[in-house]
Length: 311
Image 1 (spheres, rainbow, N blue to C red):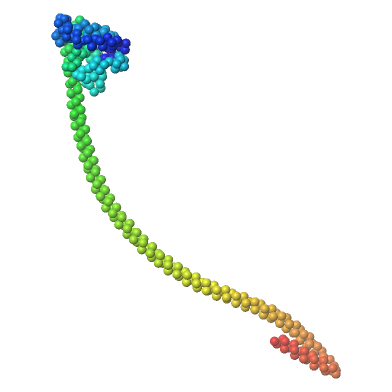
Image 2 (cartoon, helix red, strand yellow; image 1 turned 30 degrees about the horizontal axis):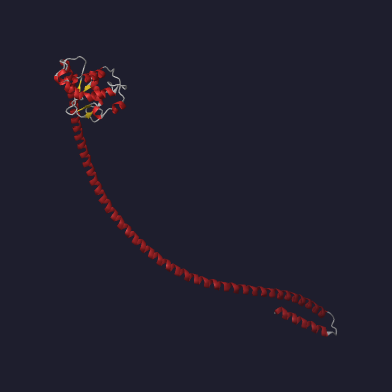
């Protein structure tokens, strides 16, 4: 189609031709070209001939899609009530263009739209034999295309069966894996229950150990308090002993001082005693005189010194 109708085609002429083709067809059935077969009589109207001439004289220019879309739905080229531009139709653009590439001429029967649409391959000034040959070639093309479609359908069925078989195998494999997973889940549940029981046992042991620890802590605290009391008591006694020792040390220092003083006095007394002894000896060696009183006094002093020394 795209190689037959140009962008600048006058669609108004085509539309008027299409609208008048049905009425004129019935009126002109008796005036058909004698060279045309009976089944092609509807192609012999002047209007359709004019339309065919316009199409056949085109130099295979491309059609603009917007121009095609502007046509009324009943003016679209169709086959077996299917739009040939539809990808779902077996008469798709690709197949349509295949026919064009073989014959280069194509016309659509608009007058039997409500009964059965057909494609006709037409050429100028062709006779019945040529038309039959062209029609037979077109039928062969359609049959070949149909065989290809049937083959494709069968291949699709075989492919679908293979896919279904593969899917069934995969489903069976998934079911087996699912059963294995269920077994593993049950095993994991049993292991989980075992772990839960073990955890409960450990928690019970932990509570027992906590209770024992608390008891030991209480006992330790009590012992610590008793030891602290004893330590405080011993500390007080030690302080008392330190105070006593300090007092004794003070007394000892005082007595040492007194002893030093007494020792000093004794040394002085010894010196005096030695001096007195020397004096006495001098008096004894000296001539006796009448001063006996001095001797007596010296002897008394000597006794006093001896007493002090002895003390």
